[in-house]
Image (cartoon, rainbow, N blue to C red; front, side, top):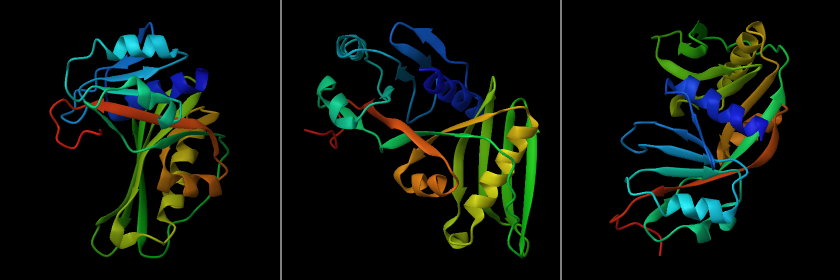
Length: 214
């Protein structure tokens, strides 16, 4: 579970959140967001341990994630819990790569406090076209929030962002890249050599939410 732990730790760094805390079932992060107050990430936790944790949760928007198929996790939760969008844990051995920005775009790279921000700006008006960030944890670098704005898609800007982030990570001494990919993002990362290690799914506590699953 080393890679899984690195993902949680690096994700917290990238988001500017408190460091994850070790708990019997894995890791706990005080995310403090309106849509997610607390995140529990299960590491090597069996079904009984998971159910024990879930049965103690009373704070709305608490999230429980695990590196398991959603169908395997679903029986642990009551109808008060909502599934989140499915993701995949992915990793790659980092190597420098080049992906120049297309004509009309400019790339900026800023690093501070273990976090690197890459932004691709439209040269015409300086509008943000694409962006991403990473968080360093030990010898690994967690890639996060890789986004291309709708008006600028299908121009290879996602690849540009990933290349710039990879270059900064290698310069910082990281040798392994880790990320949690959406279904849509997975396709881009696989073309860049990233490999799927496991599913990454979760459920959020939403008592009284009319959209709760049956």
